[in-house]
Length: 299
Image (cartoon, rainbow, N blue to C red; front, side):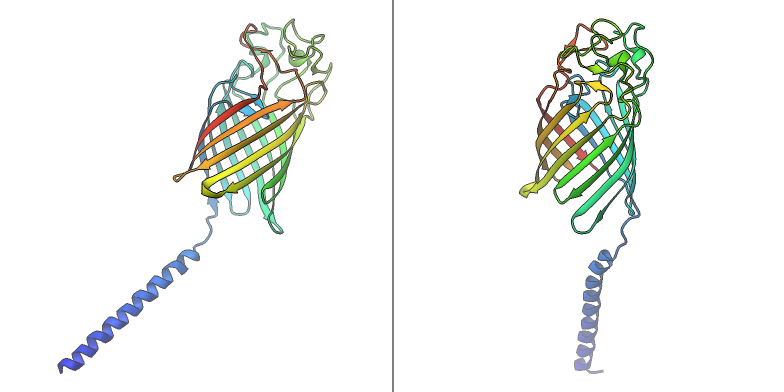
């Protein structure tokens, strides 16, 4: 076999190998693009917050909280979730932990529209008004555990949401949250407004809230968000309030994010100088306007 023929055969083989390699390289992105969407995903996060505020009211007596959450999300839109945070027994009688259990369904429709409907069970291990030291036997048994049914509708950066409590509102009733004339013992009423409280024979079942929120992504990993809402306590006088919150989030590589926000309330004075359930001599304005700082790691 002459040298010229050998050279042609070598060049042909190299050309064939090069073509195969190019074909493999082209097929790799196509195969990756064709990879099926996972049936289940499990997003999780852990956060450190300077104060745990719920609808503008502190749940930790103004102290920091560690919060963790995880969801199991199905490709259909069905999900179940768990979320937990430390809380304060100064505000929530005999409670030091809040656990939220959710089940729901979320999806999109039309163009840029989305919806989310579900149920939330808020469970406080061992929390009960009759275990509050300040009650000293005056409070009857009333657990704080609460059910919320919720639904939301969103479009791009705007969302409206509502929630309804078919159970008592965190155990509130005339015995433990009544007005000055109905309170279980002197000092048990809402100090900021002695006329405020759950009405006589009121159960607080049927409480609920409505809210609207916006969330808009900016360049360089920034997001600006805000919300305003109205909390309504069934069978009560002067206990409803309006809350607001506006903040800025910066996201970083690795799932890290930092958020700074201002939160406050308006509409009632009832929650000013609220006496601690652990020690009535210790009081705090539950819904004071304040700046919050949050550090989150998402997985």
